Image (cartoon, rainbow, N blue to C red):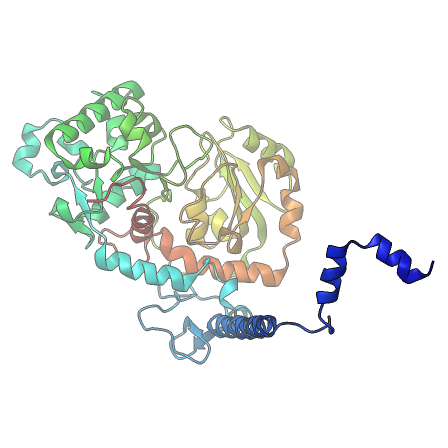
Length: 472
């Protein structure tokens, strides 16, 4: 039996018939398949061209330079090959309100610096959105903040709602920002007398004044007062009920303000807190809803900053240690170190002098995560060293704090000195330059202007204007 006979026995008639039907040239392909492959190749080529074009465009847009106009000692970031829009100049590194360091330092730290080295996450995006805020953002203030003198005398609690008559009084101390926000808001272009135009509504009570009022004072009484006031607002005005309070906000810097909303669920669940005690470890504070307010003391304007090469002390800290285990550990570590100025209580020189003569100034958590030492350090040109876990720093979605401060975990406080010594001179000088740029954001003005503390805080509210808010 030959091979062909065996094959015929293994293959069925149907299989044999299919075999005879096979094309004589199995390597050939239908024309339709060729067309599909050709179309796929064309699409892939078009996609590659589009991707390459995108990256070339992005590279062009993001190619930035730092241009110094020596005649005016001003600076702005420009898109390479295109002038920056005149309304969006990058904030001057050393404006008239800030002292310029020596020319040699200016040349070192400002020679074609890329925008990524500046203190902002994205300056141009922020500037565009800020302009839109200034054009369209509206805040309605409940009428208690506008009582005239005759009405004030007939209402025993009217001062709780009115703007402070002397907000720059040094006695306000840690609560200066709370009062200045109200003063600035009532003088700002963002306010509207027509509530139907408003994006947000301001509840104008002052926690600081309630805390100092002997008729109220205690946390429980303050909470009861705020509850009754908010209940009256709900009853007399329709705006609260339209959003269950989600488009309302209140401002405070005293830590007892945290408990002020505790008796009214809509107030602490929905309304926006603008607070100096911005700790996302504490109850009632919700990061995506609430706003961190810079805690600023009413300091006189610093006409000339001490330049970096005249700051001979590495570190400065002065403050109470009784309410802070971290501060006690700090004093135990460095209390006798002559290279640093670390004091429990008052230093042998003025409090302000410690900031002026030091490169780095410590903000160490006390009873709360926040103190005015951060803004004091910025005010006097000292790089803040923040040792305060869970602190949501003010304006952190606009400012890149790592570019002008040092943030250290509380558990690593023993490593602080070594970390600061490891910072190179060029990096320190760049941080100093960035610090000079952000100083304007930590200044309050009775009539708000530019990118001051009021407008920066208002911008945070602008970003939250539609959170959990129903459409009208």
